[in-house]
Picture 1 (tube, one colour):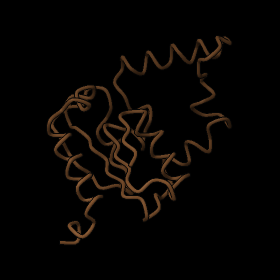
Picture 2 (cartoon, one colour):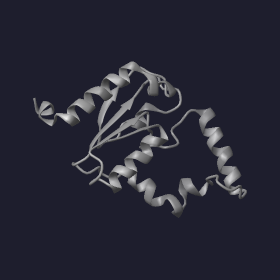
Picture 3 (tube, helix red, strand yellow):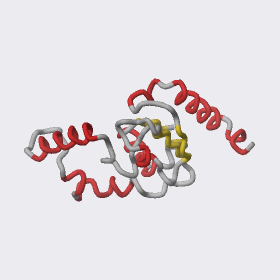
Picture 4 (cartoon, helix red, strand yellow):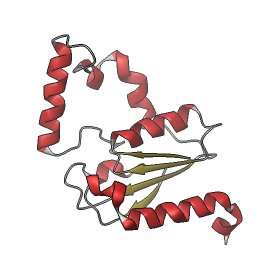
Length: 147
């Protein structure tokens, strides 16, 4: 099982897609896979600032090429590719998320679960943990999913 929040969910999605033989379940928490830059104005401003640092050659920083260039084209494509049926994918999102547009989290190849949470609060939200407990239980007892 792979669980990732925000960009971690995007990374987890690509990991699950490329290693479907190793991943049975993918859970994405507030992960804008349909529009990685469909984020709040403050977050977008910070992302652009970091990209300018990368454009200027500061080591360890991504550049504006990551958003449109060849270096990340395969990754961007994998964010929209069909997830293999062998991987159960779940996307949790919140309409009250002030960081990520909830519509960007509605992966067409994932089960959608709406929760009431802030973006950063998803990692400590009791409702999210209840859903995770259900998913873990279903993964351990697949016969319960069919019932």
